[in-house]
Amino acid sequence: MRNLVAGYGGKVAVDNISFSVAAGEHLSLLGPSGCGKSTTLRCIAGLETPFEGEIAIGGNVVFSSKDRINLPPEKRNLAMVFQSYAIWPHMSVFENVAYGLRIKGPRGEQLNEQVYRALEMVGMREFADRQATDLSGGQQQRVALARSYAVRPQAMLLDEPLSNLDARLRTRMRDELKELQQQTNLSTIYVTHDQEEAMAISDRIIVMREGSIEQIGAPIDIYDRPRNRFVADFIGAANVLAAEVLGTDGSGATRLRVGAAEILSGVQVEGVSARPGSAQAIIVRTVYPQIQRQPFGDARNAWTATVTRRVLLGDLVAYDIRWPGGDLRLNAFPSVLLEEGAQVYLHIPPERVVLVES
Ligand code: ADP
Image 1 (tube, protein in one colour):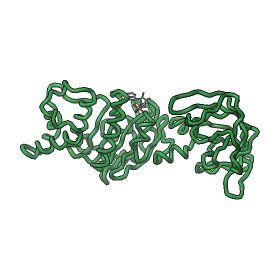
Image 2 (cartoon, rainbow, N blue to C red):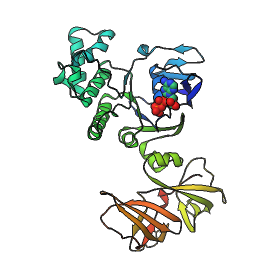
Image 3 (cartoon, rainbow, N blue to C red):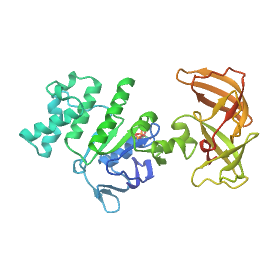
């Protein structure tokens, strides 16, 4: 996709975005509701006509504003699965999967084989003769997936496919989808607003905001090296603190002043100025600071601190602490519980302190 601009009426919903998907890759478009994810996907499918830009699939240009190319959806060899299952209620499960396939050619034994194989993939073979409306939501979505796999598309487009399922089923289907994607090696573009789903299922994630791309990267890159406050807040939980650049230390880390503390940052987002005197910000994920009763020896980035608040969350304990840099929120395991008011030692490894633009 190159320089895609799209929207409705005269209003721009997707503002000049470019990205590519590798063969066999699972790419997710992630962002809050209304940021342009579905519009982007629908432009790829051919269900919306972009204002500008170019889209090519497997080397074939399917849309180009410059060359006036705009292939209809059925000529793009893609399959799309929506949040609403969009199965045909008056047909059996078998017929739901066979319908789209017949249009493409196969008949008789070949058709049967392709339908059963697709149903097998999603664990629905024994339901072939059932009426589609007699199925649960999860089963209906499996049928919709089988229908997509059956036509052997060049790529799969999925728009919030699990959003109508309850939490437990959603987690299970998410893991199954990932396995299917790996088995079939089908290039997949997946729209979701659920950060955990995107993290769990994707090879790469595109974080979108208000029609633009904020960051593209592998899940762990986006988690550990968020480009800005928006990305840090949208994925996981993070402290964002104002910081003034002091200089660099011998190891190449950036020395910063945060409140009354001096802190080293070992991770710097591309393009952010580390010029001494510049006002920037640091991002510290709540899972990375450590607190304990004993000093951290000669560790860098260690201070004394006070526990101001403790909340037991079950698998994790949330602490608010006061340190020379101000206030900090962190999560720890409940193996050691520190009480409110306790004097503790705090350590933030420099490689967990991300310097970003303020
Ligand atoms: P997302 O998928 O990230 O929730 P969408 O791509 O659906 O976002 O929407 C992007 C923007 O375009 C939003 O402001 C939305 O209100 C608007 N929009 C989406 N579909 C239509 C439509 N059919 N007509 C007019 N505006 C639309």
